[in-house]
Length: 167
Length: 393
Image (cartoon, rainbow over all chains, first blue to last red; front, side, top):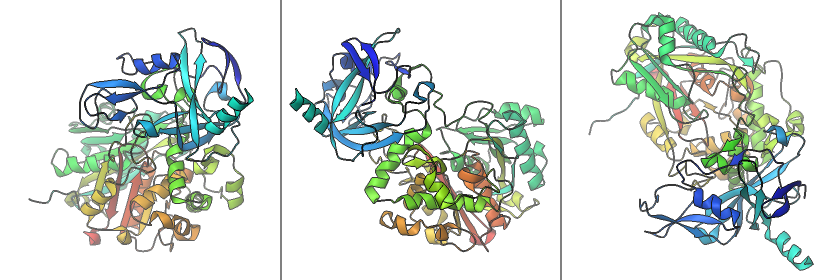
C-alpha cells in the first residue's frame, strides 16, 4: 500500500493519507469524548441506549428511538461490511497534492444495529471495491503537537486473513 | 378543515441576473452583484425597487437584507428570511417562504435572491476545512472527505449500486445541460459544446463523478421578485404563478456520520408527495424540468424520487434525446443549469423555469405551461416547486 511514515504512540507506523490533514478532536461540549479516548486503546465504541437497547451513530445527546438521555457507550466488534464507497482523485487539501487516488468506505456494523462508520479502505486504492465486502478495523495512531489521536481505518477481511497466514 | 395552500396565490413578477462569470473573474464584489441582480429583476417586472419590502434567501447568503434595504433606500423592511441548510437545498424553499409571507400578509413584494462570488470568498470544490475539526467534520475530514463531491459521492454510489445505474445515464444529464447552454448566450459554457468522448475522457474528481458530472464554480447573482397574484397582473410581464412549493427532509436524513436510514436517496421521498398534493398534479402534467445538478448522478435520483421514471427504468429514460428541448420526453435543465449556464446555487434554475412559462427561454419548450424545479438533491432540507401559467390554475 502507499503509506506515509509516522511516529505514533504505539511506535513507528504508517498512515494511509499524508500527515497534515485536519486533526480530529472531541467537541467542547464533550459529546464524542468516550469514542476518541477509546480509539487510543484500539477499542471501537458505539452509542447504545440504556433504556431501549438501540444502537446509535454518530454521537448524539438523545436516543432517537425512545428519547431517553440515558445513552451509554458499548464496545463494538471491530468488523463490518462495505455499505458504500468512493474513490477521490482530485486533491482537496494541499497535503493531498500528488498523493494520488484514495478510497473511502462507509462500513455497516451488522452486530450493532447496522450503524455505519466512515474510514479509508487500506490497500491498493485502484483495486475494485465491492459493496458487501467484509472488512475489519485498523487503528491508525497519529502523533500531533496538540495531542495524539487515532483514526479507525478499514481493510478487507481477506487481506487481514492472508496477512495472518504469512505470520 | 379549510384547505391551506399556496396554489395560485403568488406570482413571479420579474427575474434578473448579473453577467455570469467563471469563478474569480467578476469585476464586482459579491454585494454589488446582489444589488445588480435585484435591480435587474425589478426592471424586468417594471416595478420600483422601493416597493420591495421583503427578502428571502438560503445557504447562509452573506448579503443581509438590512444592508440591501439601506443601500436601496427601502423605507419599510417587513420580511427577512433565511432558509436553514447548506448547498442549493433551499432554492425552492426560499420561493415557498417568500410566497407564504406574501400569502399571510406579512409583506407585499418579496425578492428571492442568491449572490455568490466564489472567487472573492472560497471555492466550493476545495476543502476549506480548518486545521482542527470537531463533530461531524472530525469523522470526515481526517479521512480526506472534505468537498461536496466527496460528501455526497457515497450516497450517490449507493443509489447507483441499488438500481444498476449505468454511466450513460449520468452522461446524458451532463450532455443535456451542455446542449442547452449552446443556445444560451448567458451561459458560461456557451460556445463550448461537450461531446460524449470528451465526457468519457474527462478526469475523475471523485468516483462516481468525472469532471463533467460536477457543477461549475462561478461568480454572479440572481433574483426573482414575488408579489401577490393580483398585483402581478398589473406588472409588465406575463405573471408566472407558483402552483406548489414543498421543502423538507426524510426520516433522520440529517443523522450524523452518514447514518441516514434511506442513505441512497436525494431526500425527496417525503417532499415530492407533498409537492404533488399541493399542485393537484403529477409528473405527466409537467412540460419542462429544471433539476439541480450539484452532480449529474443526483439529478437521476431527484427525477426518480419525483416519480418521472421508476428506478429500474433509469438507463432507458436518461438518454439525451429524452432530455432536450423542444420535443424530448422530459426537457431538462434548458438553460444549461449548474453544469453549463452558471452555478448560481440553483437560483438560475428558478429563473429558467419562469422564462419557460413566459415563452422566453433560449431552448423553449413550445407551449410550456407547467414548469418545475427540484433544488439541491442529497442535502437537508431540500425543496422543490412548480410554476404555471394562468391557464393551469
